[in-house]
Image 1 (tube, helix red, strand yellow):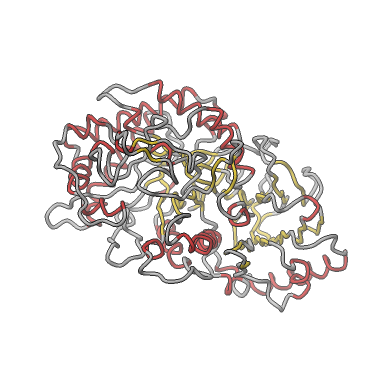
Image 2 (cartoon, rainbow, N blue to C red):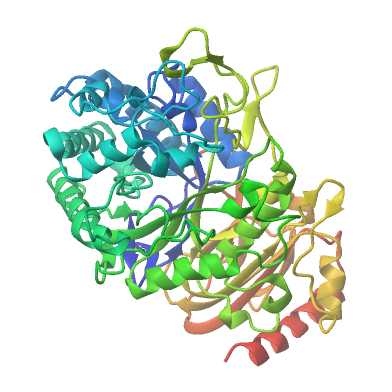
Length: 586
């Protein structure tokens, strides 16, 4: 399925991800996977390369992803101090290669939660992941206890062992940070040497450290000062290791203090790398977002609504813009089991809506130019073993976990294996497999997607086509639709939009200033509107829009709501959209 402009090198330019053809690029996908946090497959996302390939194909074909955040384990990469386990690195590289060969970009992440599993007792209610046993033994930490904790994350601020161990890492006590950085450099060197040149091009960058938190602040220190004086110097050290390992042209995906954008006031801590200056192309502003109010079951009653997270994600956009770099929300999600799982369909729809646009649906059509750049994001998570684990929690043979994600009672995986071993979605495919602009030949002015996903039997329609566009409304009907506005850059490569599986060839309609097409033809360089397979051979499709001009405003409505629309209806819808775009975008 590869075409001449596929698999380009990714860079950061003008505050956006861009490829070598100057196209704005959106990274969308999932975390692969929480399995890395478990011991059952020895810190790897998959039990085998075959499972990795199966997962990659499903992630493309069912989940619509073009990127994964690929989790790695320091504990398994360096089980003995100073000794990198090349067998682990080889296995991780083989599994990573399965995604790269499927046309999916990868950014690795040395993952940690609660510092390390080796801090926790065999009969503990909780567990962690990250640092190896030797790093924990070097610290002589107190017996872990969270006290009265309803959620595992409370260990971050309440468990003295976790707090002290985190503090020691950031202050390089016992040389643990030096050891971590040395292992990271060896890991990146190994990947660069053992992936082919084309595969290595598909590696978007590296996430140095998951969800950093001080553990303990020094006397008089604020969270903002900790970011400036402790966290940022660590990132600069990691950046130097990337350069030494041959990753000079790839950005570090750096995360601020974990609680910088918490939506519970008593959790929020000032941060966001405010004192790091202009990050520029060598760093990406990388953050997570979970609705702790919704997850708590106490602070948010009812469901999420249109525009629920517009302000939260606007904060991410604005912070990245001020830092003059691109942004990625590398984790977001909501539990799919338990007493707040009923909120998941609306919470996830609102999060994807906020990734697509700065505006809520009710406001989009009246001010599309305020929509802003489309954010990249990786949902937590894509674990094909969901509900099929056999994890000895903290090595305890009397606590064998099989349910959910098998880690601290989490259950967030969007996928599982059915009884035949086939990957199937656990969430509405209309929500996950989305239309989005994976590459825009120019500057995105605005984008929206109405997925028509369901909350039970209720269809969620948050941005209906306005009545002032009757022919567009008629064309879309009750179907899904997306609308992209962009200004062309005169580059040679076309604009690309991922076509969900729900956009079958026989039902896909495009109305654009470039023309109209029902069942668009196969792409050629001479075809303004065409369709092609996405690279990787997974069967997923893309829409390709060719605009050889520069600085011109273009629009494209893509819908699956019409069956054999008449030429008159297509022309009328096109006239309406042209007048609307001319009026709303100056």
